Image (cartoon, rainbow, N blue to C red; front, side, top):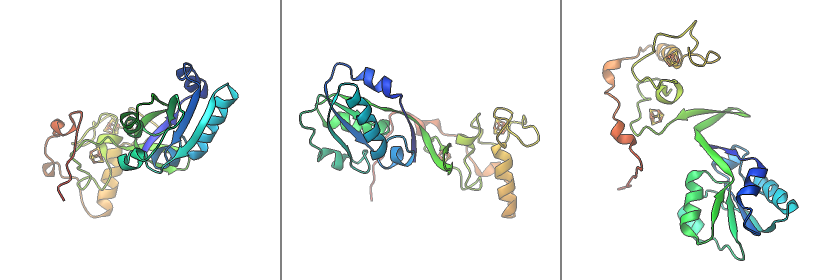
Length: 208
Ligand code: SF4
Ligand code: SF4
């Protein structure tokens, strides 16, 4: 899931200061799952904006805001500005599909997982060349602060990461998991990281 963080309501209010009539759009996939930009939070933002002099035209979600065919069906009537709580991708889709100004009410943080209810952890940086079949299903590129693909840096202290000392070195985690399968990490199974696969902007054609 894409993890987002709701901006302070006052900041959203300031961003839309030139506008009067507002539509607030939430997204139930990433933003909603994070409890930062689903319908509930969209209603809270709308209430705050209304309390501060804005006219709320509509508050809505369409499930996944990055689904272009769904966004195309939206009709934003009588609206001066759209406040989107979708991730950066979803908000850009809305901005491309409407002539109405669009502002974001969230910051997009990372691709992650909600491991412990209120805690969300980064699990993937979308490197474009996934190697986790070789690393027990655990990504060192996203979860090692140095993005080391070829093993630990040697700085770990008692198994804890030298950069984030409240977190186990991901290479220790990988090693323990591999050993539980009766395996060990084999660097020769990995090629050098191909950074051309993460050049921006990327695109993907589904040839199926
Ligand atoms: S190896 Fe790349 S694609 Fe696979 S989980 Fe890690 S960052 Fe994501
Ligand atoms: S201690 Fe482990 S997780 Fe931390 S930077 Fe070094 S290799 Fe990466």
